[in-house]
Image 1 (cartoon, rainbow, N blue to C red):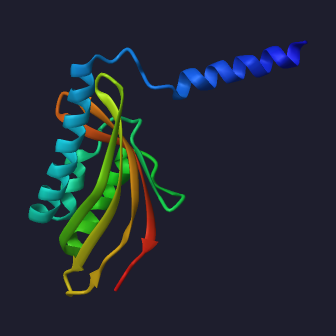
Image 2 (image 1 turned 30 degrees about the vertical axis):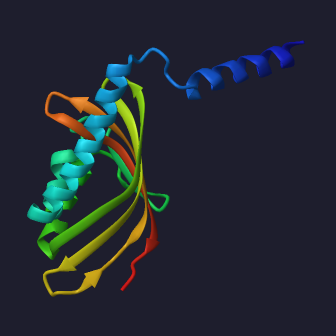
Length: 161
């Protein structure tokens, strides 16, 4: 008797967790969608003009921030990102990022998920070019400083030379 009740409870919790949030109004949904898309466009623009250091403008300063790549935790928190990115930026003179087929799902007011295929062109100070491609997923949150990436995962097909 207890087992069927436990299964039912798990099923109900799963549905509640993954079901679309019906409490978002149409305007809140549009606000989240347009805000995250604008952030994605701004990332592309700022990487082009300022290089990899621009990423720090879009990472949430929250201790909830983390980033993984290809199944490995790269930045367990914002402090590790703030240490690594400036060092990396010294080695890369230009970044060209292209998002394709951006998908945005609104979760709550000020919170959403972005997913997109990507292509990057990374040109080092020595002129060496790498072109990784793959898929990006991340949670974005609205902060007093605007939309920020709270967590992210990059799945890469590997560098294409």
